[in-house]
Image (cartoon, rainbow, N blue to C red; front, side, top):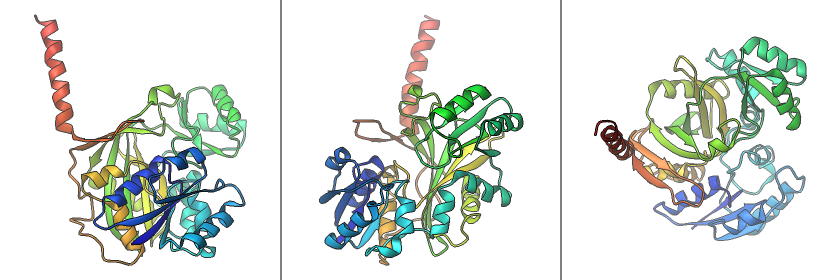
Length: 358
């Protein structure tokens, strides 16, 4: 039985990864580590260990010690803060990884640097400014108009993100987040976004699937409307998204390897603009794909171990586009269809019409 070590094992992204492996046609022995002792308790693994945070200089020595004790066949990183650290020290760890090259990891970890690469490649992207001082905020508003999108340059889950229509308020927002030199201001696009999750081997696309976010769970409790917690998503099969996502990856790495998740946001003209790449890890709710019939974690593990892959019906968007994944805190996720959701809408429309025309 293959042994897989998973980081941040008690977090939602890792739980989706672990549950996907549990649904595979073969068994896996899963070792979990987490820097949060409470999250560690809920990790669905066979053995578990508490580790320091990835920002701690003791993180790599402790991870290395656990690897030498448990002998995993593969180390999988499933948290944005850990990917750059494990990537940097992968050569010092006695465990196999399946990560993109480190230069690509560093570029994708920096949203401003990613933007520069896409702009140079001729991709349509939101104009973006690194905010180092109050003067940079003034410049951003002068160039971007009356509404800008502020966010942290590094991190995931909508870290520090909010729309701003007033320069003074924007200065306050960046200041309270201690974001000088760590925040960017971008052209505001729209609330509509899509993610294109893909797996590559030595420059060859193995499989990719699009997913559109329908709404953010608890979005109404955040100034930005972005909670970082996807509440509902539906599958997407769009040749435009496929093309732009691949161009965004190619602009950073012409020989990609491992996992690449491209986030794209639609502009006023309906064009999906790449806004970031989640590299080396799966997006949080990838169990959606597994339950729909595409077990990406299993494909990824088989690739990483150099073993025969399960059958993949087609490389681009093999899943039907009418499927919807609904999830929330303390709820068992629900796989349903757009048609089923429309039935509820139609029944309400009829009741409303009856009230208006008794």
